[in-house]
Amino acid sequence: MGPKALGVQGINQEVDLSILSKKQVALVVKREDLIHPFISGNKYRKLKYNILEAKQRGLDTILTFGGAYSNHIAATAYAGKLYGIRTIGVIRGEELGQNWMHNPTLAKAHEHGMSFKFVSRTAYKEKADISFLDMLDKDFGPYYLIPEGGANLLAVKGCEEILTPDDKGFNVICCSVGTGGTLAGIVNSSLHYQRIIGFPSLKGDFLKKDIRNFTAKENWEINTDYHFGGYAKVSEMLIEFINYFKEKTNIPTDPIYTGKLLYGILDLVKNDYFKPGTKILAIHSGGLQGIAGMNLVLKKKNLPLIKV
Ligand SMILES: Cc1ncc(COP(=O)(O)O)c(C=O)c1O
Image (cartoon, rainbow, N blue to C red; front, top):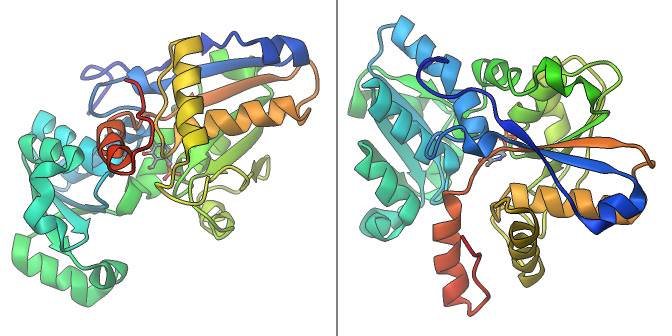
């Protein structure tokens, strides 16, 4: 996968909201979500060097892991289709084996050629064990393994390409955090005066150690106040924000990552966390494919839907 195949740089879009002018803070969103309809945002970054590596090793199968709404599963399936590589998704949740066709993410991934192996949540936790990987070897033959969320050194290398020399005017850069690979890549290519703030979608402070495996720099912090209860947890307030933000700025965000990120940034602006004159760059890391699945869940719960 290379620059010839896909557009590689997300455009920067300025956000115009009264709270920003009131606090004299500039907010610009890097629209990495627009890179590609299926391999969007950080997924393009994370897959790029991994696919090149699989090809170089002469492997024609990629095996990877994910949950029912995984952006990484969706992107890997499409990248496989694009580059003639067989893809296998090991999916958390045995029950989905009967129902995957009703899950928009998995149905699309299948349409794009991905085969699935559904495993129980207990087995999924052991997915890095040698015995589990041996079993997969027997089932599928030799494959190139990409970890859950696509987070490895090559993924971080890809994420180092998110920032460009044109971004040197920003003094704060904010991004969503799942595994922390994207944040680490951004930190690696940031300039010494730039502060990188990561907003995790998961509960817990366990990420810092993982991030330190991928970066030696210290100009970053994690803000754990905006996970909204944890991964894939949403509230009516978050949905209302996502719809409000889309209406005001024409920027769609997803309920798992980027909606929480933008909510968090604007809440911090409101609470004077940033000095007047701060120039913030928020990385839109994609994930919009997950909205369809989330809307099915919201509908069942009688909650308002995310407008697309
Ligand atoms: C849309 C989106 N944004 C952000 C992230 C978080 O990235 P990372 O796992 O590298 O922290 C993910 C998950 O990979 C994602 O799908």
